[in-house]
Image (cartoon, rainbow, N blue to C red; front, side):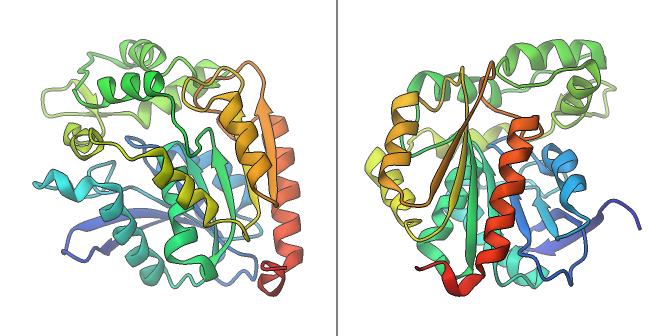
Length: 292
């Protein structure tokens, strides 16, 4: 069996959207729905998905305007609310009725939104360096680099640019950086490497959302177990916000990844140990006990 199946589905407006499908669709364990950061794609979760595909199904989508999914002429279709509509269609297309959401950065905000729109389907949430209060400094840096192309002549220069764009990535070998670069750039018709997303994805994000809206989404998860990671050097999720999240949620497990910024890879030994324990508890609890 190959490591993953490459699949396409149609969004509500007919756009063709891509996802990777790992593991056994008939596994009784709750599937993982892996949601990447704002400009990222399904490739970010490959190593994590391979580790868990033996015992459960893992779905890793490319949002519209990223990776192998269609781009959109209308930038408003890149708004997170539109992405949520796409994800709801994905769940239907994949035949998934309950799941554990794994969300990195913006993907974590999408994961929390499922607590408001589909709470009965959500078995657990894993948040990666994101919370209901987001540092403006960290967000401004992200918005700056995703809003424009960064054409490069070769993979060495692409890796160098990626290290500058995402200095907080917890990657510990040149192979890991090369894999990350291949998930960031694609070869164009001009034989240069270009970003693998539509720069217009930044446009609907410029208005932002209020902290009260994000706290409302986070609080919708009050009956859902949460495992949350924070990079010790994160410029997006502050220690104070991380503490407030833990204090306000009764089923919250907080893990800080040392010497790491935005974002942890989730393949650090301490991250994998926490994920193993979290999944074991969710599997053992069963859906009938989530509201206890």
